[in-house]
Length: 253
Image (tube, rainbow, N blue to C red; front, side):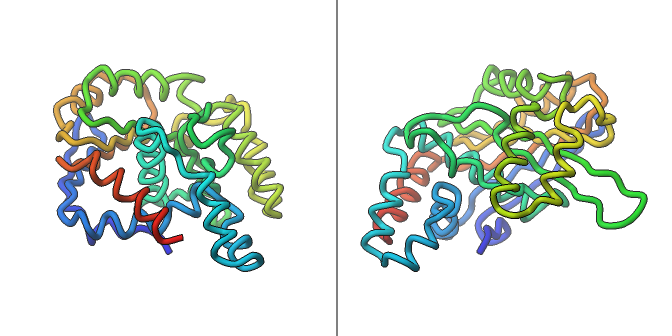
């Protein structure tokens, strides 16, 4: 079960400097909370379904409880990354092949590396593999400085996904038995083999304020050759939604 953004957001799309900006205002908070709470377990605990099936609900609930962040800032960052990953998988031609937050060192710690990696695996002869490099920011009040920090992260490694992040994704795919996908990713781990048209960027934000002006400034100042896809989800109830999502996950276990 994924997230259906159409049911709880109202979108407006803009074209800036030849690139797309999608602004999604949350219009149904209850639906947003329900849908996001339904996917949080799969993003934070890869073995949750197995634990539930083998040990039952009480043991599974205890297992998941140790994965849920208690720090408000980490809750915010994790949910922003989860929403971004769900957007990639439901709205774009790329797939985010792993939910990387399952491998956090500690529930109240952030992870290093790119916030998400999307991959387009060729479906027919003549097509090239392509990668989506995602930087996600969740803030009560998004500012230009936060957007600028995201831009700096996207531009590292010559705009390519970091070798560390690609290797991490490939390792998890090998562990899951998806050797073919892992092999394809590792062919391009350094990023140096990728042409600009095999890479896209997604700057993703979740905030209480409409960040349109900040995102337009970022787009108009970008002078590289990699396609930019900017997405903002926003609601005046930003912080309340975060709290309700994690509270609901905890209550339902």
